Amino acid sequence: METRSVNQIKIFSLHLNDMRSSKIEILNTVAVACSEQRLRDFMEEHLAEEPYRDEHWSKVFKKGSPLEWYNKPWSGDRAVVDGWIEEYELQSYLSMKPSVVNLMTDEPS
Image (cartoon, rainbow, N blue to C red; front, side):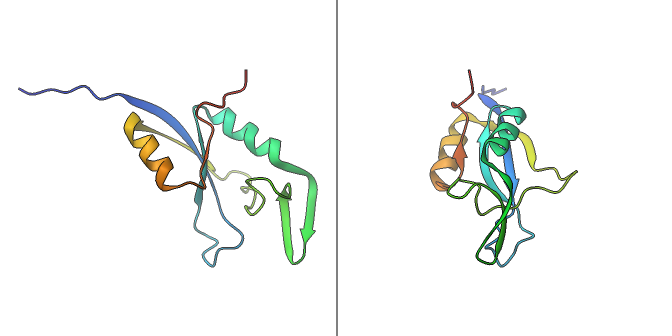
């Protein structure tokens, strides 16, 4: 019998919808991290003090932030999803999706 060892890591990904998209119901992977709390903190860090209008857009995330053009998830929405991935796949995935914020090594101390 053949066996092999595969190193996997658990990742958490933040999924939000881009308000500029013609398919606003489609959720996009916005960021990945080692913990759900890190992604929730990331959203909190970028929340504007209060919702604002930017021309004809209603926004909740700070202007210029990586989340500016995304809608905040509705209460009860599952914006953070977890899963297991092989280590080598993470770098491959991130290189194909340069817009995804990589918080895997940016854990707060």
